[in-house]
Length: 252
Length: 224
Ligand SMILES: Nc1ncnc2c1ncn2[C@@H]1O[C@H](COP(=O)(O)OP(=O)(O)OP(=O)(O)O)[C@@H](O)[C@H]1O
Ligand SMILES: [Mg+2]
Image 1 (cartoon, protein in one colour):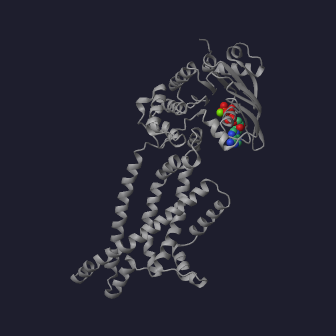
Image 2 (image 1 turned 135 degrees about the horizontal axis):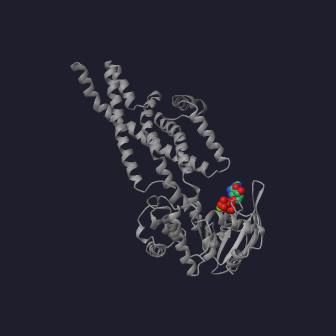
């Protein structure tokens, strides 16, 4: 087991956004988090990486137990050293070229030597097909290319798990494929991934586990094949149906 | 123009340029360095929302921006001695000019810091960078680029503001022009001459600004 959280709660301005989330991600899992807008998916992911501090909750990460509310700076650093986070809008460092976007964290936080950092970065960029753009600046790249660089930046951290928050939803339709291809490749290589997504096809064909969230709760979770074939809860069924009627069907 | 006026202009020119080099430029450089340090500190305190200090910073900006520079110079140089703070004219001018422009520059820098989207800061945290590393490698370099035109503007404005130091007895270029004029009574010619020297300095700075902006632009656009 890679990650388990229990009873994660989080409020903003008196509104409870996460109402006690329990969830498990096993090593090698590709888990998809689905759910309507505003159900708390992003907030959950941010709490897992301590970009947001949960009001309460416990986490077992890589065999170690943490209190999500009161985790110490050093504990957070330890968790972050084993995770990577891919944002909806990439968040590349705009004053750094592609190569330096990937090496910056390795060299500053990781105290790695330049040559080694560069090696690692080029490896990661190779993996996402962006090695030939190493000296470009983010503003010179398409959204799909920026997102692939962002994935490389995460990969270079050598993470145990990668969190993705709707990695393709800011992209023009014709650019979504290249990012999903990279993610598929990572999944095939056994990378553990937790992916908030509206891409049903991706959730169905790549993820092996689905969590369906609504109004701050996990309404249903289980193997994705089962979830899509026989959703147990009415809310899951409604959700799948509305998405399908919007995006066409999901036959292979 | 007759020969006499020409001679006055030609004789005074090296003197005025001498004072520009010896006094006006150093006064500008020192005041601007002080303003720069103040503005970065004040802007950062507000950006990082440091308690109490943020309030103090807002108070400072409010006072400075709400009162004339000339009045500030008089207060410090002529007013403060009566509460036991006696400053020489030149350091008094540096302090007042620095604190004055620093308030305006702090607003430019704060706006520039705010313009760097927090997503990049979070991305920095996710690759385990700490606050200081994120500030020095990501936020400040980008903010500097955004603030550069406004800061250049402040520098150019400060060159001209140094002439006000004449009113608190600093013997700088403009005061020197006044002194010469007191002997020869050629206001139009002399003050035109001094205006042209200010113009020349500011023109050089404008060129430097454009050169700097081009340099900075090489690091790609600021598209999100
Ligand atoms: N920093 C914040 N301050 C106040 N409210 C917030 C904050 N972050 C999120 N919220 C609120 O929490 C709720 C859940 O937000 P969240 O972004 O987690 O939803 P989501 O499931 O990711 O939605 P989407 O599919 O639209 O991305 C929303 O109502 C949002 O307005
Ligand atoms: Mg979201």
